[in-house]
Amino acid sequence: MRPEQCQHLRARTGHRRREPAPARRRPRHGDRGLRALPLLPQPRRPADRPHPGQLPILGAAATAAQATAPANNERAQWLSVCASVRDWAVANPTEYGLLYGSPIPGYDAPKDAVGPAATVVMLLAGIAAHAATADRLHPAPLPTPLPAPVRADLRTLIEQQSSDLHEEVLDRVFLAWTQLFGLITFEIFGRLDGTIEAVADYFTHHMNLMADLVGLPAES
Image: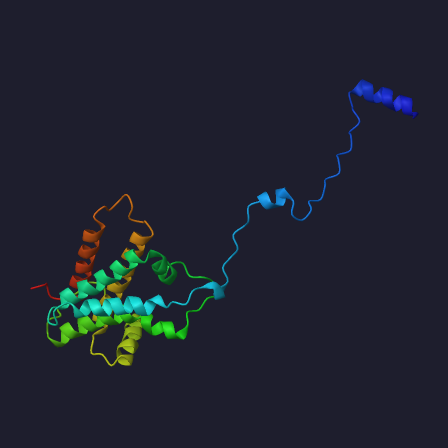
């Protein structure tokens, strides 16, 4: 087919010759367009995780708070320790988030952070043990029995600390410990916004409920 016949055929069918697309210019380094592109967030490397040096400070605050309560008033000591943890978290939300926020894959806390991290739960367990020694600890029985594997884990911890606590009591202390930090985390990260306005009263109420569960006597 001759060229003039091809042109006549395209005219009859409405087919138009497609013009070649202009060549795309490869951006050069320093082009304005490249600088305008949003940068994707880079994942944090495990080495970027700050050293949890705030743990001893938090533990020291909790220890000092216990010392301000009367020695024979375990409930007051309990509430003082719990309140001090919340006060520290509210005053240092960024540091709290680094300590108790989302874990970073591949990051393992330094070994010297394990002890300070257990300070608060050790204080709570010590308060319960002191009340038990003074015959002031009377936990109400619960209908749900402690599973045997969990009892064995708790017994191992009790023997490691040379404590006389019963497994059921330590189990309740652990429950109170997780409730303490869970409630603080909900407050710090805004999970209670729009639901609970009296956050301080709500917190104290729940820490009293945890003290009831452990079996601490009411404040005299």
